[in-house]
Image 1: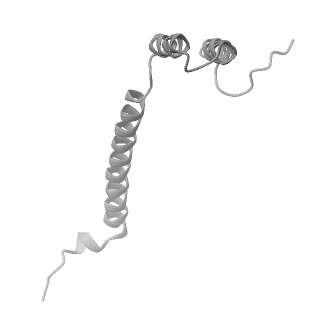
Image 2 (image 1 turned 120 degrees about the vertical axis):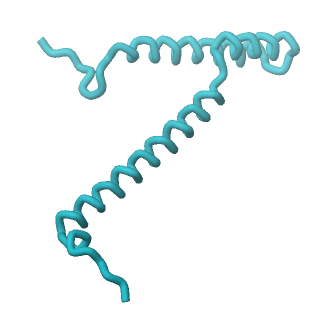
Image 3 (image 1 turned 180 degrees about the vertical axis):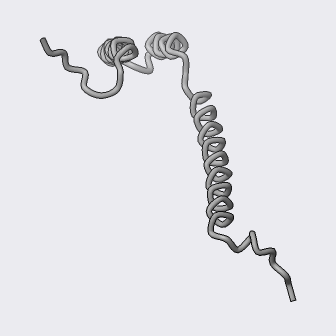
Length: 97
């Protein structure tokens, strides 16, 4: 027969133990998300390298002049949007007077 100390059966102890388990699971979750984010960040290609690849494809004839201009303009448009929203806080971006 197992003897369980009285303090292990109190609701305060059980709540503390549940909180400890929750904290451990939270730390594990944050760790796993950080690993995934680092892994995903490594998959991104540098913009100058991407433009160099685009120019190389155009020079080889893999893409037409029109495709080259379309992709290049879209790339510039996306980078301009990204740089303009970098300084904005999340939420409502409208300006009111």
